Image (cartoon, rainbow, N blue to C red; front, side, top):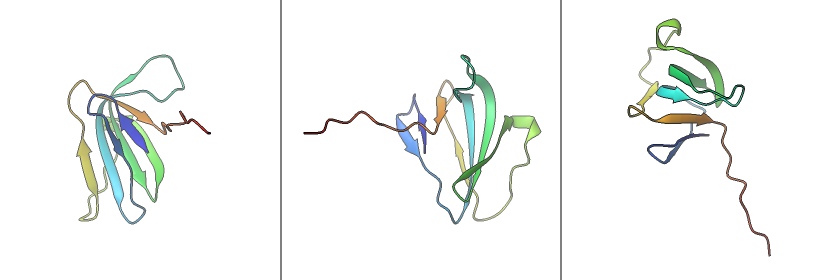
Length: 87
């Protein structure tokens, strides 16, 4: 799953289609900085690519789901809510 901070929505891919997310910023946790203007391609619930907009092949198919996040939004791949209270 992904979480877009500005819109406050979780984005999940369904295994029977490809999902393409156009993001203003992506925080992937591998560096302390966000990466700008990226395309994330998810196929079969697996991230296939994360690359700048001009450097990625976007699948063209009627089954491809395209999501364009609003300007200023930040995409957080793989964020899992683990804040739980057990009683």
